[in-house]
Amino acid sequence: DADVTQTPRNRITKTGKRIMLECSQTKGHDRMYWYRQDPGLGLRLIYYSFDVKDINKGEISDGYSVSRQAQAKFSLSLESAIPNQTALYFCATSGPGGEQYFGPGTRLTVT
Amino acid sequence: AQSVTQPDIHITVSEGASLELRCNYSYGATPYLFWYVQSPGQGLQLLLKYFSGDTLVQGIKGFEAEFKRSQSSFNLRKPSVHWSDAAEYFCAVIAGGTSYGKLTFGQGTILTVHP
Image (cartoon, rainbow over all chains, first blue to last red; front, side, top):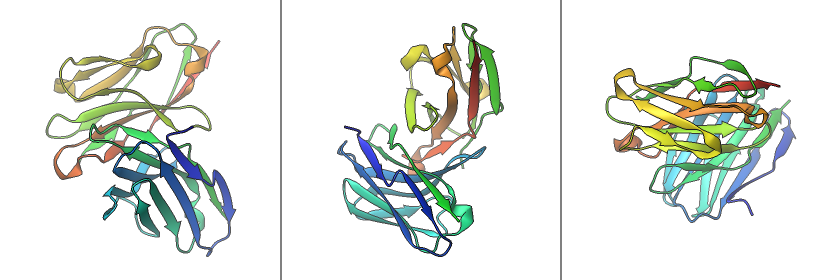
């Protein structure tokens, strides 16, 4: 089984809808991250959490919120989706060594 | 704040040829450096990392990278490319201090391999 899972893998939604992307990890790590990937821009950090009680904004947090339900679960929400949030979203987790392990990604399309 | 630049957006090589992907970083102290690979439709897989010590690091799939402090570079190399190496490659850096644990990615380099 994969160490980091994301659901759904693909989602099409309409402008203004609320949507939640979920992430679970089985590596036992405290640190979890949400990124979005856009062509030519690499991956950009949306939110990160270093433990269950710690939530921090990344470089592009506007329009997004997160919830850390447990050590293994970290969800990303778009309160009111807009077309420029169409992207590939990745969840990741890391241990004290710093290297990050990524989920397979969620392809989100906002029409 | 730290930053990473991958000057080449797209590189094309023939199968069996050597490969070098460039990465330059901006950070005042010694960073933690990584190379990741993303195959089409897949997540990111760690190829190799540099934290300290020997500046030439070996990774998976026959890749290696060399940390050059004087040039602020961490270029990825492979002596003989295989068709299965076609993918997008990302260089990334973690700075120390309060930023510890947050990766900053380069823009990525797409590798095409011709038979």
